[in-house]
Image 1 (cartoon, one colour):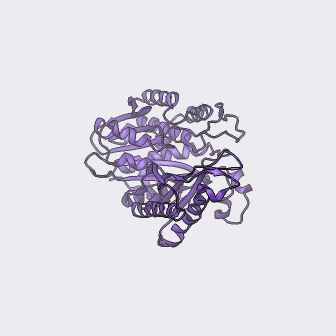
Image 2 (image 1 turned 90 degrees about the horizontal axis):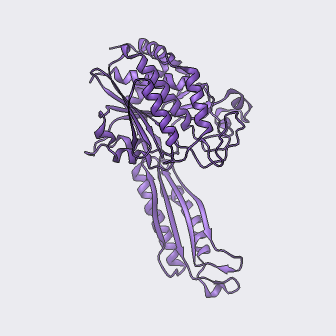
Image 3 (image 1 turned 30 degrees about the horizontal axis):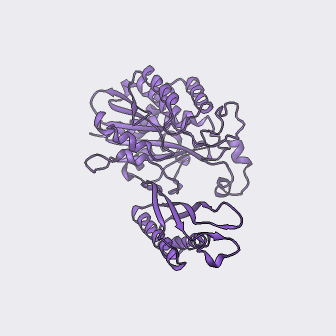
Length: 420
């Protein structure tokens, strides 16, 4: 067994053995040319070429535009590392010299940086084969933002066509002072459910509301009552969010419409709480419609769901300790779970119903200048003021790329170093 200290030194040495300038240039090029979910054709082709140039065996078009690289190096464990590739329908406002050249599309969530980090780790691990044995899978996943990419790759045989991994790893840039690494044991990201509700009323003239059943009034009652779910039905020890992000009803000032439509997102850190909230939403929407005398029950549709991301405790502790050895104990933090959602955990679900252990961590990436200039006397106050993922102003510090390459390379070595 390799000691933690020597493993950390080895990881730094390996991570340094990649083409920093080329990976930085690759990142900037990906940022200039973002591609939306399921359309990551150029990104995938570029990633596949970079992997092949590193000596990795590559398979393209897995689950659509997904790319899988296999680097075998003798007997031992198999470690899967994943990066997402898709961008968002956001108009960039960063003013960066390498800002998006695609109107209305931007890498506002750092997936271009994740891709660059993974490819840097591939270079480092391929060049440093003498320092490790086992197998590494490099997975470039499409359509994370829509919650469809991991499912598509799994359905296309990711865990059957390629060596079955013993552990899965992923990292994500975030708001916060660059240079830190954020690890959380257990729940790290929330389950997410997107719900559409169509409320049926009886339309008519705005001057004669007594002859109608106004779906807008019902919708307003539903929206108000939904806010009581977390406050009055969910135990305070649980984190949960119910947000109505879309309301649509009517086409004219003086017409009471036939229908009103609501779009919701539900977030919580456990599947049980998620089910409890969805059940409450159904009850409230149905009850408010009945109370108003609606001519039909509401249509309630689950549009999209993603499970909670729950890190394996043993793996989380091992990699966090590796990163303490690599970057210093004060640079590794535990911020607790976040209410964002991910489909990464879908990759860990095996056909036989079992789940592969995984760990997912964050790399804060706000530049020092932006962080220092942010209002607030405490890190929590500053965190609320700096641009975060999905903002048109989100601009991760490119210096984090090197840290990300080192962090992932170290994590891979730590996992390969475990007994089979």
